[in-house]
Length: 307
Image 1 (cartoon, one colour):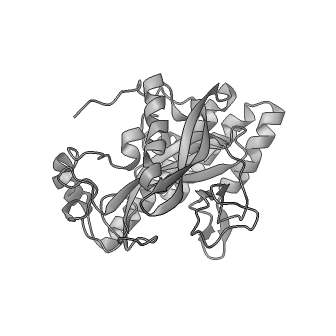
Image 2 (cartoon, rainbow, N blue to C red):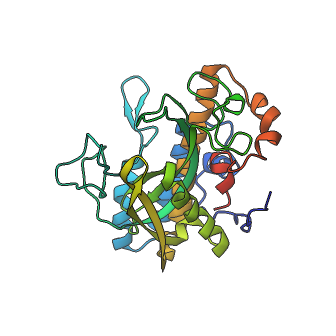
Image 3 (cartoon, one colour):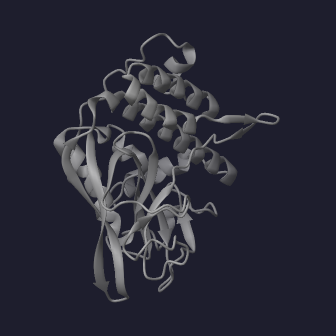
């Protein structure tokens, strides 16, 4: 296997004033903290970094910070503990649910019903992988895994005959690249999924950033679409390109904070999912050496932690 380009190890994060043991614990790993405690501590750090910005920039970020905050409801129930940014999709010929003003090949969100400009400018924040198996000719998967380790029934993905690139051959299960991204002014976040023929476009964002020796949130990319004529007919895939522009350096600490918040949410979600299935990390460790040799392998955000 070819060795991936390595970025320098992350420098110690300057968290400004002392915000107590919770922030220190999160910076050190925070394994013993609950998702709420981790997110609260990271939001505290984010708020401190926002306070260092100029008034106009801080106003932009303030909108996003309020969106990310969990709201207390009832007897300890939390609303918005796991924040899910609106997804960005491309309208296909067979898309059923889409705003009437969105044409085929244009970008939109089913979550908010809004149409996006194309190309859509974005700053990558947090990438991860998932995978799904699509029956022949079907648009919806009959099996999926949010962590590329176990499917929703608790079966080990590595043992599945349909796993991506089993024995070096493409199978019916497809691995997707997901990127949580911010608008260049950092007022909002998006979730962009690159699947099937769009997958290389998502990988390119991460790979190009590594080659440049930068971190994801230091560069501005564009998301577009391309019309393809395939065996199944006409369809559109997502494309990405580096704009040549750097993100505003004033937002670099903000980008790292958002990366850590999204990462804390995802890791907690994966752990809870494993607990529900009764599976342990020991099972994963037992096959990790073999799985690492599979073409296109890589476990979620672990491949991208240095970004």
